Image (cartoon, rainbow, N blue to C red; front, side, top):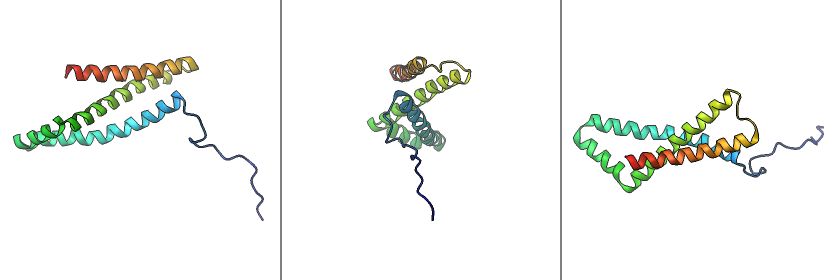
Length: 125
């Protein structure tokens, strides 16, 4: 007969209080998925260009609608967040910025930079 294991079980995400570092980590993974899916949208647009004027006009109508613009806005934010956080990880790979104040500051900078770059892109475009 097997005796009951008295060791505690490993806690799950539901046990921990969300912190900036964990939220940013989850967002980084999520934006990676969004970027992969968004690549299908870019492929659709490129195929529409190759398909001729009518096909391109249809794609522009879809992407130019309010919903299309919302999707493109979200995709561009995901791109800039993933880029900013990737640069943050490159700094960490160099062995810098591991103290807790630097981790929190770099996280806030990554979020701020992604928002600023997204807004700047949409103002220019």
